[in-house]
Length: 301
Picture 1 (cartoon, helix red, strand yellow):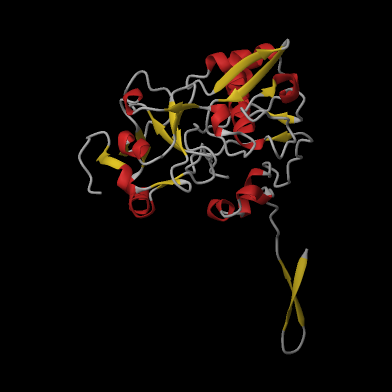
Picture 2 (tube, rainbow, N blue to C red):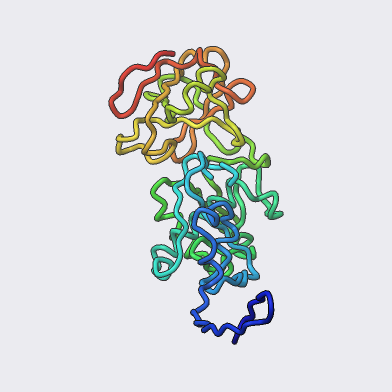
């Protein structure tokens, strides 16, 4: 190959040699900082720079904590994060764990959009769940799971998020708490707390970054049906749900005063204390005390 150079009187031919270099994949021209700005683009490309084909079935990615159960929508501020895939998804344990995570998401938040028949106490038929065209976080079709798999997911759930009920020869399942779906009625789902003597500890775990807003507006239920409290501290062995382990602020509820003023309190089957508060919030005047965690130093109200 050659190029030409123009002079005052003529053309001069100049020889040059072109070296052939291997072509890098398209993604190498995109810096990591650029791709971070477009996560959907980065995740949909393989190492050739072309978009990977998507599955015909729906699959749900479990994002890291957003303050929600989570979580996208921020649904569940008590749910653990961590999508399963690759080699991890091949083990039976992770397959069942991933099934439980998807069931939690469906039963708490998705019954309406999936046209799933749910009773006002939160129960749905297990057979109806297993007909849904969804994939778990281990990329396993929900339809490939069995009733025994569902029972195993319930048995292995260390926070006891589920309740099972056998009725007229059919197995039903529900999430014990954490709902955002409006189908569920509080009185049908939960047991009322009628006396402060029933509750030794009622504490909400949160983070210092949220405290200023909470002290101004109270504890809000946000998209959930209830504000959640735990019946003990994060290190208490009997406390299995109701609070994340990494919280750094504890807000204690004055249960006696709240009940006397007409606030309705409930407890779930897995011993999470719940309330709608007043107009969806628990006012600051019902805070008994606020402490930092784990050093338990008093924080000003």
